[in-house]
Image 1 (cartoon, rainbow, N blue to C red):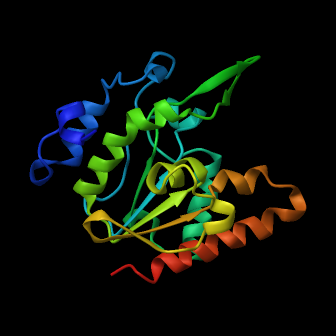
Image 2: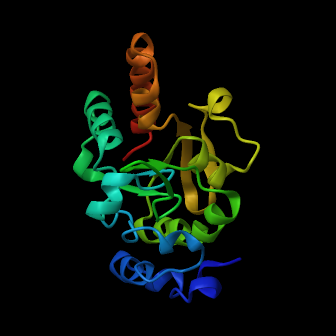
Length: 207
């Protein structure tokens, strides 16, 4: 599967984020678009040195059309600040571009995307990597990490390790900011500190 063949995206030297963003709005490569408000594409500087990729947009992201603007985004903002990384200089995106959810009364609860849905979105984040050309890719959580490193990757065992992926990008996985929110109250500081630790390590390879 290639980016250009599957979604008729221009060759790498002609890819722009604006064009990718426009094309992604009508993506129907899987059924998730049927129940989502909109496609939530990546956001940030065109050539950000750091690209962070999470799992999928949440409820607030689906409504606002931007990644990491909900509660987990607030945790990420605080962690980046603690790591000494300028949030405005980071490109943030997700491995899956539509919100997958199930109803629980009046609440839309997050539902984990399956392997085929993650695979359907692969051409988008691959194209984002080509367009942004970051020095470092940070994978936030298991879904993003396995999308990049393979199904056997385990964040709990391999977070904080460096991997080299095509185009000279250094990549690392860490926990998703939502893990901090889900943790028991007495463990939240520990989870947050581990996220900051990994982001700080990512910063060591930024230009």
